[in-house]
Image (cartoon, rainbow, N blue to C red; front, side, top):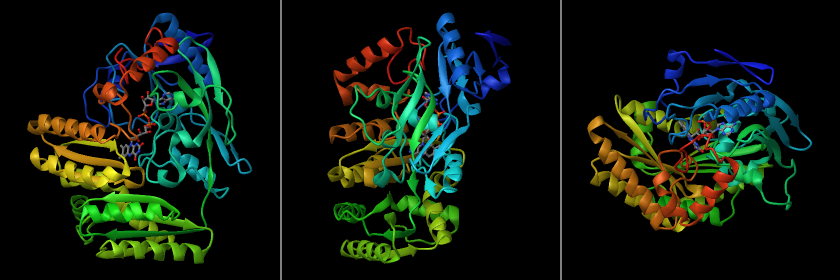
Length: 448
Ligand SMILES: Cc1cc2nc3c(=O)[nH]c(=O)nc-3n(C[C@H](O)[C@H](O)[C@H](O)COP(=O)(O)OP(=O)(O)OC[C@H]3O[C@@H](n4cnc5c(N)ncnc54)[C@H](O)[C@@H]3O)c2cc1C
């Protein structure tokens, strides 16, 4: 079916076999078949589609790489998917401004490949090869956030199309600004419910000359967490600080054929501009680890060694999947204050036992972000849901958040008021102002 928008002919694909691919996402939750899918390639085409949607009152779901984990992309059935994967040009890389300007469908690994030619990197790393638009829309973060921040810290400016068919540039390509209300940051994390991002200017960072990596095993989670907090407290220049529990290490061993100690561990990167400084920092990290009872310390200094060390951590999700064939997987994503990390990990493990589930716990501990991966069978569906609910309520009870980085989507909507109280009414008012007819990703974050 071909529709003409303001003279711009754009194909809407309505073939059932194609639409069926949009009925599931990474969560495995079932969604309904959307009405169609459209592939705009630039800002003007997005504008044209949104104006058509406004006039025909057709809801739209923006889509990047489709890796989100909270039902963000699932349709009710009346929506058209606005797939931005074709809007994928890198428009500019400025080595003097340390910025890149991209279309929203550019993936982070593509940007990194291009930036590396200038000795620069885009640091936000959610593990999956997500799109920059999707990462901004979920305020993604990841292993390097402890040093470089998540998307809010790294998106300087963006261009967006709103539900009324207008467009605006939000933010400026500068490191700081105190000018007006920060609408750029309002769009970041809004999951396609307030506007469609059609262009982003992001920060790039120099690739450090020297990086040393460590994998350090400890007898208990409490000692692992204490060591991590002391490393942070010493202001050591760590760019990654990840916690992996004993069952996770067992899964890694089974998947990778390794024989690492099956006890809690920290995966760490420390970086500097000189060999002497990075070595001194590495030694200080080892000293701190030993005072907290470290039982095994592996170091990786060459690119190849470091890559292999981080492959283990990055493959954790796939390791757990391969150890649990035929199961479905639930992932929790709470973030808590540092003082509550050890109790949170303990409580999570205890809840796993209580519900008879084999949970693995890992997290971006440098950000207080604790993930669990829960494999479950059909008959354990309810137990997994109850476990997840108790984990989230524990986090909220100790002053944390239901989601450190994955977002509210559909799955975590029920916790919004418990976390934000009357501020949810303010969020509703903002949504009504920007999208009065509820056309942009309806039912996500807030009820339609
Ligand atoms: C193995 C694995 C590991 C992961 N680890 C992490 C992690 O460490 N940290 C983390 O943050 N996430 C993680 N994720 C989740 C996921 O990668 C992130 O949520 C990512 O930011 C989603 O980007 P995407 O391009 O896939 O977006 P999509 O899934 O396509 O969309 C996500 C949301 O953004 C909206 N959206 C997409 N593009 C636009 C646009 N141009 N304008 C407006 N709205 C838009 C969509 O409507 C949707 O609501 C992980 C996922 C997997 C599968």
